[in-house]
Length: 442
Image (cartoon, rainbow, N blue to C red; front, top):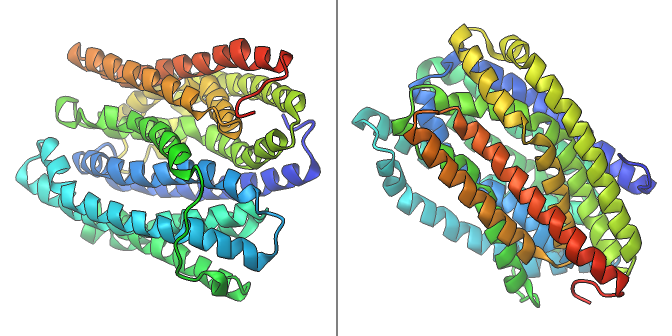
């Protein structure tokens, strides 16, 4: 999969992969403890349904911000440290902080409306509000940590940010062990809020030690074409995060435990994608952007197609493993304490349906990075719109007919449609434009 990549890209990919593997191992320990403490319970269903909005915000910022900021920072990568971080702080960091504060205030203001939509009993409503308030702190600190990570990655520094993120997982585990008996599901919220603050604090101390923090001077500057480009990418990533909301909006209409079952099945399905896909994508976006800016059109297209083919074949092998070994995998990881044999059977069935779309998720993620790098984000926006529309239509149909496991199948079918649109457009438009020595943005 990595043939043809330069040693620097390979090294950065290895760093991100190792850090992601460590994070996922610790994260799995966290999920094992959560499953043991809560199983597929009503309280965990409530937590997941509340968490979908903070998760949407943090994931939106996590995936959208690098795609907006890194191509701009690449143009200033070779200037000195003072110039780079001064540019970053005035053009991106402080404007981002202002927007983030506005988002957190907006979230807290509309939280009661969203929780009211879930139609929970009074006791569950109060629990959901407490969880939501705690998660607002998590959103604030996690989002700041993410923008700081972008600045380091743009300078080719992947090691420290990748491993600092482990603080969050460790904090949740400690909170679960110490407070789950007394605080119940709220212990996860406390862990996320404290962990988010700690990783932010450690990153700031690291920047101070590197004599970088002094370049962060409160100043706000405009960046040409940032809003027009950023709005398209944010819209794409926002729609991409609506997959979870499409499931959890049916909390009051699904049998107890289905939302949590979808959650655990999705964790197992996304494990190989997060380790390989996200790590490779995080390294390839700067690489794609650099090749595009240098006019290496043929080499860029070739790298995209070879990488797409290899990740598709790799993901297909993973699908066979997850489908055949799913029940054993779920049982050995989660089946203890409150997580019963019935929970294992439900989760493994959902995992099999989720797994069908995994090869297309890999290809989709890689192609999105390519489309962003060649300034063709509007194509991704259109593809994402139609795939999300399909997901919501299928979910409505499946829930109406009481086929609740179909909520996992609809996600797979949606990603199949999304990837197909991106592939067809790439073949029919981008390849033909290369033959005419034309390219997007040129």
